[in-house]
Every structure is written in structure tokens, then in C-alpha cells.
Image (tube, rainbow, N blue to C red; front, side, top):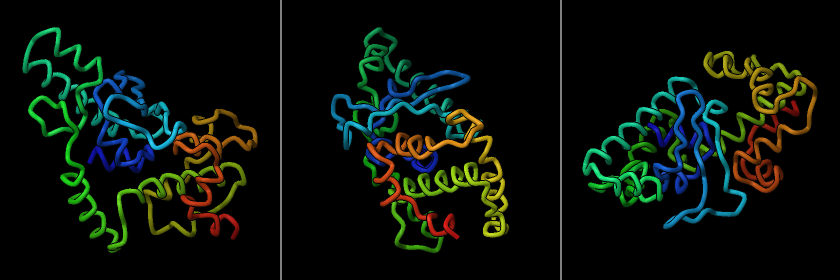
Length: 220
């Protein structure tokens, strides 16, 4: 579930998710952050993939609480195994993985152990066998692009989503979301750059050409 949340809410690549380490999670009760960065045993796709994600910009309070609980449980479990300074140093030195089946969490989890059952569930719910984990990034880009266009152009897309109450409620918060992300109440061209930055792209053109699937709806 956490892997799905990070892919959908934070536009994280599967490699970025499953190679997360405990010291990449900057814990805070109010505003935790995730550091997507290179480290020992982990390379990023490009230099632009380096980014810091404030979870309050992306997740609900319940989702953040869930992630905080996972972090606290993993850290406590590791420290309890051997109450020594070396265990704390392992966390601080980026040697302990966020997702791991290793007894000491010093190696990343086999991604198929999570991705395969998760995608089986998603394909069943969506009735689409072509879906893969990377499509979560497409969803992030598409929904935030539509949200940005609603905020900037005062679009009314409610008739298209009236049969999806949770989606309609999320889109209804577009102006509030823009203020939290930029923040400005004035019309602005900066929103696409915010989306590209969160995607880990150097240019919004990359995001738009390959990940956004609501352009036709906006044009209509």
C-alpha cells in the first residue's frame, strides 16, 4: 500500500521507491519529507531526478500518518535488534532500507514481491491488463495538469467526473491546491514547472509529451 501511495501521490519511480533508505525519510510530526537522491548502491535516472518532497504537498493526513508509523516501526525494529551505537550509525549512513525482507534491512526488497500482487489488484479493479506500475507517474502528471488548468483557466470539468465523487471533490480543491504549491492567487505560468520538478524532469515538455493525458479535455 505504501508503495502505491508513493507512486501515485509522489510520482516516484519504482526504483526510487524500493531503494529508499531510512535516512531518506526526514521525519517530522508536522511536515515530513522524502529525499530522492543518489547514495551507495543507488543511482538516479538523471541529475534532475534529485528532489525533496514535502509530504503535505502530496498526501492526506491519514497517508502521512501511515508513512510516519512505518518509519518509526522500521527504525525501532532495527535499533532493538542490537542496542548499540553502530545500529544508529547504520541508519545515519544510509545502510538501512525502507522496504526490505533482509533480517537487518541492509538490502532492498525484491520488487516483484510487492509490484506483482499490487498490479494484479490494480488491473482487476480497473479491468485493464495493460497497466503497469509506471502508469502511476502518468496519473500524477495528468491529474495535476488538469488541476492546474482548472485553477488557471477556471475550467468546469465537473460534468465529466460527476460519477466519481472522490475525484470531483479532489478537483474542486484545485485553487486551494495551487495556493499551497506555488503560492499565489494570481494567474501564473509557473504551475507546469512545479509539476515537472516533482516528476524529476528538466523540462515540462518531457512531462507534457509523455505523461499528460488530459490535454484533449482541457482543449474541449
